[in-house]
Image 1 (cartoon, rainbow, N blue to C red):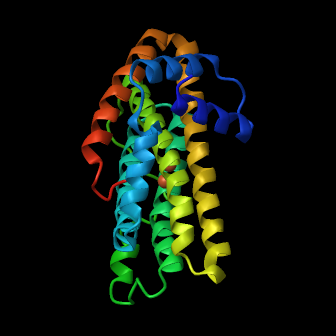
Image 2 (image 1 turned 180 degrees about the horizontal axis):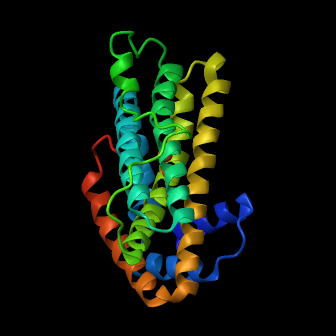
Length: 245
Ligand SMILES: [Fe+2]
Ligand SMILES: [Fe+2]
């Protein structure tokens, strides 16, 4: 089995997720057709090479905070366009998680690199998050087709799989830079993000499974493969920039 598919399915199993045979088959087929670069040995090496520069690593935490904030806003919009209320609400909760992550990346910067966040730039960095809370609701807008939602869920699922792998790469290098007395706090933040990202893979995988059962099997299988291929290309183009999000 492809490494990325294997890592993902193991993480779901460990998380207690029920078997999702349709999703599993779809993910394995896509990963076999287009093996993701982010599961390859050289990719991890490249990452560690870049992260050996603490300035690069600090900047990459800020870039990640920005990406999480943008991701939250996109999800917020999608939640407002999704007709199925149960699905829309899960996407809304996901957006709230990503808004929190934007701030957690700044908290990691603060923790691992004491003094890096000056009081002057703190408000700017905190504003990278749209700051959604569980009391907020996205504005209702023109509803989108069910296949568009499924396509978005597939892209989210693949994105979350990559994010989770980036989290696994980030953890050991950031821990080395972090002052020993602050490592406990850093580990708590890293654990909470990793747990959330695994849940994001889980709920999108479940919705993909429901789509397969609900008559979209052909569509999902072909989109999973097509989107993974595109995502791999995007990943290859991003290598070397500080955007391991
Ligand atoms: Fe996130
Ligand atoms: Fe996520």
